[in-house]
Amino acid sequence: GRARAVGRERGRDGGRRRRAATTRRASVVDSDAERAGKDKATKGSKMVTSVAEEEEDGLEHVYEKSRWFEIRDVVRPTQVALGWDWTFYKLANFKDADSAKAYMARKPIPYVKYRGLRYVVDHHHTLAALNLAGWDIDVYMEEIFEYDDDIGDDRFWGNMEGKGWSFCWDSDYSRLSHESIPKSFELQAFRNDIFRSLGGFCRKAKLLKRGKMLEEKLFFEFQWGYFFWLHRNDAYALWPSSQLQRGFDRLLAMIEQTDDSEYIGEGHLEASRDVADMIFLSDKVLQPLYEVLVEYVAPLAYAYATLPDDARVVHGLRKRFGRETLPGSVITGQFDFLTERQNFTMPEDGKKDKSKDGKSSSSSKKKD
Image (cartoon, rainbow, N blue to C red):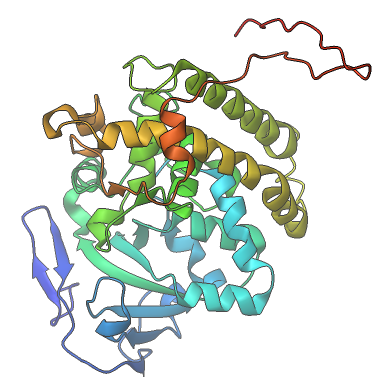
């Protein structure tokens, strides 16, 4: 009764999946009549059918266009953590209303419907950045699955995790209850995951490449972030050199201290810190730090990519993400430093330049 007569098929897991649309040309249809008597949040929305050739995955999609302020109370996250620094990086797309509208038009949000709520399965950082910027603009959402209301929360979240649509792990990658997932896209409600931000900046720098299908995109950066977290202390002896690992550790500490002092520790977000200020700090301080951090982890990623196939199983990845090896691919041609860094030797810490009179002072090596 609740499912639409067209575009649904009933599944064994208590839900209905939307089928691919058949229309070839893009169209916009007022859906008010179709939605009479439904939630107020969807009133006045419009259905948009995309052109398959314009989609990244080459498929046709049907999106629902709604104002963010009208629907945000029924839009829910499905993960406990965000990369705050990756969210701040995305804020540059929301510096004014026009740029925000253009960006959201390119970022349709896939969601799962359950008990009248929309559980987002991708683009959490985009929605957190939009919410932080405060624009009330159109967002485009795509319902990819609808669960029956009577399946129960435990079964619902079990299915969500089984499909790779939920992330519920703490900073040590120990399991959390689904009740720990925030109920809104307020950034401070999420745990700050620096390793997730690192995964994003690795993809931005074209060190990592992900696939085009939704299944290949989901938690891509989280999985690589987990890999970097797992190797942070070189417990698996995969770093090409101990100097690289120690340099990575120092840069990571700098980023953690910057996040804590500028965003988290002093409650700046709660005080409605100016968005332009956050964009400036991200552009001038955080992004340069991550750019260097990407250079440090590039040899580690390359070392993983060159392992034999049977040696690429990542410890604990299946338990947390349902797969044994990392998704996507490592792109090595973009990094001129990569070959040199395989045999890179860090200069001794504390080494001094020559003194003004031309004499050089002895260098002493600091403890790590």
